[in-house]
Image 1 (tube, rainbow, N blue to C red):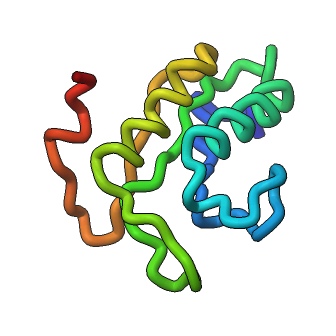
Image 2 (image 1 turned 45 degrees about the vertical axis):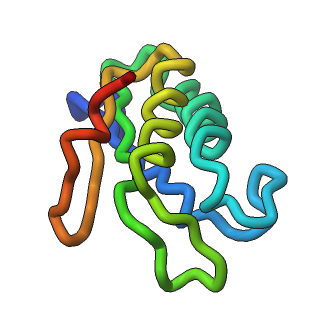
Length: 109
Protein backbone atom coordinates (compact mmCIF):
# COMPACT_ATOMS: atom_id res chain seq x y z
CA UNK A 1 0.00 0.00 0.00
CA UNK A 2 2.92 2.38 0.63
CA UNK A 3 3.41 3.26 -3.06
CA UNK A 4 -0.23 4.35 -3.33
CA UNK A 5 -0.78 6.52 -0.25
CA UNK A 6 0.78 9.53 1.42
CA UNK A 7 0.91 8.15 4.97
CA UNK A 8 1.11 4.77 6.65
CA UNK A 9 -0.26 5.04 10.20
CA UNK A 10 0.11 1.70 11.99
CA UNK A 11 -1.86 1.19 15.19
CA UNK A 12 0.99 0.10 17.44
CA UNK A 13 -0.99 0.21 20.66
CA UNK A 14 0.86 -1.82 23.31
CA UNK A 15 -2.47 -3.25 24.50
CA UNK A 16 -3.05 -4.93 21.14
CA UNK A 17 -0.06 -7.25 21.41
CA UNK A 18 -0.34 -10.77 22.77
CA UNK A 19 1.39 -11.98 25.92
CA UNK A 20 4.92 -12.98 24.95
CA UNK A 21 5.17 -10.65 21.94
CA UNK A 22 8.62 -9.07 21.70
CA UNK A 23 9.53 -10.97 24.88
CA UNK A 24 7.07 -9.23 27.21
CA UNK A 25 4.56 -11.13 29.31
CA UNK A 26 2.33 -8.02 29.42
CA UNK A 27 3.13 -5.72 26.48
CA UNK A 28 0.61 -3.11 27.69
CA UNK A 29 2.91 -2.10 30.55
CA UNK A 30 5.93 -1.58 28.23
CA UNK A 31 4.88 1.28 25.93
CA UNK A 32 8.36 2.58 25.10
CA UNK A 33 9.77 -0.80 24.17
CA UNK A 34 6.69 -1.95 22.22
CA UNK A 35 6.47 1.25 20.18
CA UNK A 36 10.19 1.49 19.42
CA UNK A 37 10.51 -2.13 18.34
CA UNK A 38 7.30 -1.97 16.28
CA UNK A 39 8.60 1.06 14.41
CA UNK A 40 11.98 -0.59 13.80
CA UNK A 41 10.27 -3.65 12.33
CA UNK A 42 7.73 -1.71 10.31
CA UNK A 43 9.90 0.96 8.68
CA UNK A 44 11.80 -1.40 6.34
CA UNK A 45 8.48 -2.54 4.84
CA UNK A 46 7.72 0.94 3.51
CA UNK A 47 11.25 2.30 3.06
CA UNK A 48 11.69 3.93 -0.34
CA UNK A 49 8.07 3.40 -1.39
CA UNK A 50 6.91 7.00 -1.01
CA UNK A 51 4.66 6.87 2.05
CA UNK A 52 5.42 8.74 5.25
CA UNK A 53 5.43 6.71 8.47
CA UNK A 54 3.27 8.16 11.30
CA UNK A 55 2.08 5.74 14.02
CA UNK A 56 -1.07 5.84 16.11
CA UNK A 57 -0.31 5.75 19.85
CA UNK A 58 -2.47 4.52 22.70
CA UNK A 59 -4.26 7.12 24.84
CA UNK A 60 -6.66 4.82 26.67
CA UNK A 61 -6.72 2.09 29.31
CA UNK A 62 -7.23 -1.39 27.88
CA UNK A 63 -9.75 -2.43 30.53
CA UNK A 64 -10.58 -5.65 28.67
CA UNK A 65 -7.14 -7.04 29.59
CA UNK A 66 -6.73 -9.10 32.74
CA UNK A 67 -3.87 -6.82 33.80
CA UNK A 68 -3.65 -3.42 32.15
CA UNK A 69 -1.72 -0.19 32.56
CA UNK A 70 -3.26 3.19 33.27
CA UNK A 71 -2.34 5.34 30.28
CA UNK A 72 -1.66 8.59 32.07
CA UNK A 73 0.77 11.33 31.07
CA UNK A 74 3.84 9.21 31.85
CA UNK A 75 2.69 6.26 29.73
CA UNK A 76 1.77 8.50 26.82
CA UNK A 77 5.05 10.39 27.06
CA UNK A 78 6.96 7.07 26.94
CA UNK A 79 5.32 6.29 23.62
CA UNK A 80 6.10 9.76 22.26
CA UNK A 81 9.71 9.37 23.42
CA UNK A 82 9.94 6.04 21.58
CA UNK A 83 8.82 7.71 18.35
CA UNK A 84 11.43 10.45 18.90
CA UNK A 85 14.15 7.88 19.63
CA UNK A 86 13.24 6.00 16.45
CA UNK A 87 13.83 9.20 14.50
CA UNK A 88 12.33 8.06 11.19
CA UNK A 89 8.64 8.75 11.75
CA UNK A 90 6.92 11.95 10.74
CA UNK A 91 5.18 12.61 14.04
CA UNK A 92 2.50 10.51 15.68
CA UNK A 93 -1.26 10.40 16.33
CA UNK A 94 -3.04 9.73 19.62
CA UNK A 95 -6.33 7.89 19.88
CA UNK A 96 -8.77 7.77 22.76
CA UNK A 97 -12.15 6.09 22.18
CA UNK A 98 -13.89 8.64 24.42
CA UNK A 99 -12.22 11.53 22.62
CA UNK A 100 -10.66 12.68 25.91
CA UNK A 101 -7.24 14.27 25.64
CA UNK A 102 -5.21 16.21 28.18
CA UNK A 103 -2.97 19.08 27.07
CA UNK A 104 -0.49 18.01 29.76
CA UNK A 105 0.30 14.92 27.67
CA UNK A 106 1.91 17.14 25.05
CA UNK A 107 4.19 19.06 27.41
CA UNK A 108 7.66 17.52 27.22
CA UNK A 109 8.87 18.77 30.61
